[in-house]
Image 1 (cartoon, helix red, strand yellow):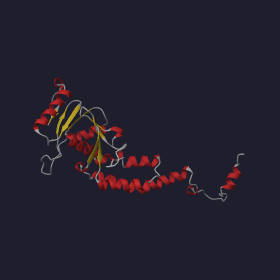
Image 2: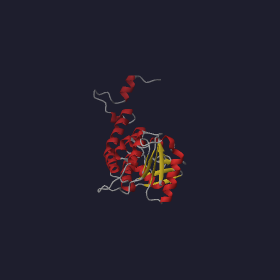
Image 3: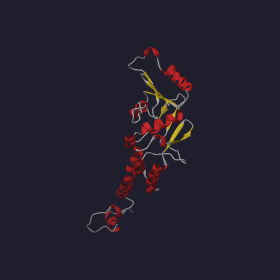
Image 4: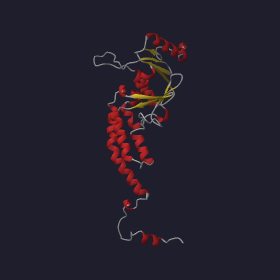
Length: 239
């Protein structure tokens, strides 16, 4: 037999004329929403601290874990500690809302023990770099992470290439990668790279390899990616 509305009211012990408090009803969606909001408020200062740490991060501080053609950036321990503290505050209570909040404000980063479904880069057999899985969350893009990760990956691979496929963020990172990097006195810094820019492709190479390697890598890129009859001073440059 179905209970009447009056039966439910009487059993609820809420017959007094007062406002309902969602926290008195732990299995309702409003109580769960308040819990999510409380967790988000608690980890918001950590998100700000994490993002500020990424702004100050130097690409040389990033280490890498390699799995096949995939390269997983490992952030320095102090930054990972902030990330771990935020995850610890969630504990086992992270539903889809909180998980999305974490991913949007922190990203999902690998450590030495776990690389599953984390931010990573891929280099295919032709040397073209990719950023699978959506790349970097928009909230972290002000930290110049795109440049830092591409520069770190270039140090691992010695040379990389890209083309028009991909996102605007990827193109901006590449533009930053090949732009001159100067010391305070105006000389080129150790961060600077060799580059070739064509009509619809780009190539970067570290300066620390031998001249024979530089010639071999650059010549291979030119022969396989540049139509010599179509280039001019407006669409081709080499450094």
